[in-house]
Image 1 (cartoon, one colour):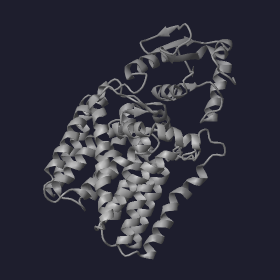
Image 2 (cartoon, helix red, strand yellow; image 1 turned 60 degrees about the vertical axis):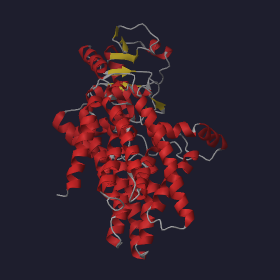
Image 3 (tube, one colour; image 1 turned 180 degrees about the vertical axis):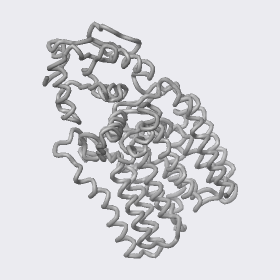
Image 4 (cartoon, one colour; image 1 turned 45 degrees about the vertical axis):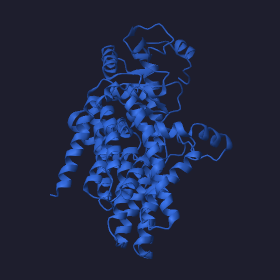
Length: 478
């Protein structure tokens, strides 16, 4: 095996080992959205029901995530390790695809340095293990499509079809990676002779994943927000938070729009990487204006500029939507790496890698959810001892977390009946109607507005709450 591939294997192992402080820490928990995908995987394992789209939505292709989590759950049970760590395999696959793509443009040392930066960047610390509606698989599949686009100077219909399928999968997984990957595919087609059969094969193949999912769409989705909005107020708001949106996206320590600032190294990294992005764009555009032969640099610059442009029109300027830019900048750096005198760039990358190492080693300090693993398990043990079958909670996302940590054996509901799984709501109503003594109201201790029967450092509980008591707190539709 080529020595650079042995070096790549060492880098992959290093990326896993440096994540151990976070993985073994008490804050390594699933958020509500992750818990939904985990429960979908549990349903597939126990009941044989495979739902390819996120519960209650007509988007969010989660089948690839389920296919990787189900075997781990079957072998080792349902827990944070068996549900989140399979996502790390998808992330490593994406990093390997970037390594393969860089092989086309630069020598061994820059290629390894850039790949190491991908593996250790704070940008991907939390998100490399997020079981979250297709983000990590989309990263991997999009970069596989980019790799197949650039790996050869010959384009045939078979290769075009495979690229098309990967692009189609990228779109249904998380469409934010789709435009950038298409840029590389189009440049590849143009550079390899513009074969009509290949572009037709790619186009037809591209729509197959979307068409295959149409039978699984629901008539009244629980959640279907507009991805783009061209309303003046939305554009004005996105403009006002634009720099913050990009900075938090590259900083990586964010969830539900909130950024976590405990680690200074991650904050410095994000600012530095955005400055580096401006340098990459400046050098790339100068080459474009000077008329030099650019090759695939056109695709990388177009992918970066495209993301920067359409970010103004996002229905929700969530930092995670900036994630694709990171990979495009890495590829552009590989294409721009000077053949001589690149020691300054090496030093810059080593500085970024150092910031990443510091962030990963201290990843256990990032509390990105209001609950820890130990306090949540303590809560579930108490509920099981009280033989609780149904949980009420005012926190919408907490209901899914509690069902997940109870291995799906305890149901939970939030304030209203309308939810992602109406059938589960009907079962919850049956429990309350016939066994109301086996119910509990659960909330975070910091948010609670009632005197508890039980509490620990993070949760408080009222056992067998009355209907009047629940209605006072906004619960409806019993």
